[in-house]
Amino acid sequence: MIGTNLGRLEKLRIEAFMDQEFREKKNEFVITFNPETFSKSYEVMSSPRKGRGKSGHKLDFAGMKPQALSFEFMIDGSGALGEKVAVDKEISMFIETVYKYEGEVHQPKWLKLSWGTELFKCVVQKVDINYAMFRPDGSPLRATIKATFLENISDKFRAARDKTSSPDLTHQRVIGEGENLVSMTYRIYESIQPLILVARTNDLDSLRGLEPGMKLLFPPIE
Image (cartoon, rainbow, N blue to C red; front, side):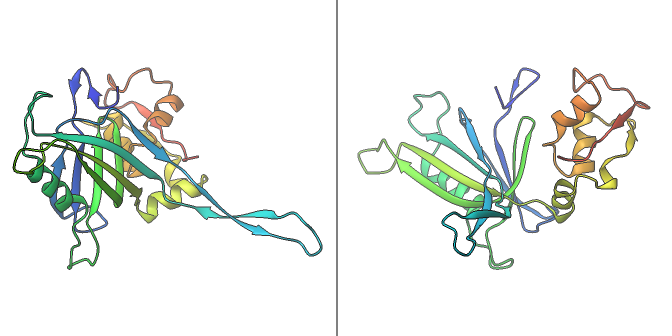
């Protein structure tokens, strides 16, 4: 199950930043009840080109849309699911973190979503809130939030991904003291999404047990 690390349950964490370089952290939101699943979508943009006197169209590649990630999670204030939370307060904190317009930067905050080995740099696209159970006074006891986020990665990582011959990502690197495969992958690619690719390239059966002085190959991103 995604979200577990060495048997310990990891909760989905959303960190919000005031800058695209993710240096100035503003706040964060930790989801109480993890989503059961989440989905990623990829979309290629094509532009139809019709030849003169022809009935068909030729599709020209026009670019790739940012990767989208969507998930749905529950906020429960009834206590029936175990941990009891204040629904209104949790929703306000979530909206404050992912959706609130920041006048200083003229947009909502830049976000990092982390869950186990998943790390997704993004901005919010859409939030839907569905209220279910209610107290006699009308206040909600349960709500389901469905949120969609769009990938927002650095120009360096995007250039490396789009240009597979990037010399910056084809060198052997030596493992330093206190380093591991996850930290090195993130430092080199500014993402841990290529983690499995790096492990396969180096014939690694585990992400652990690497010793200082070992050499690893970090391949170009395909």
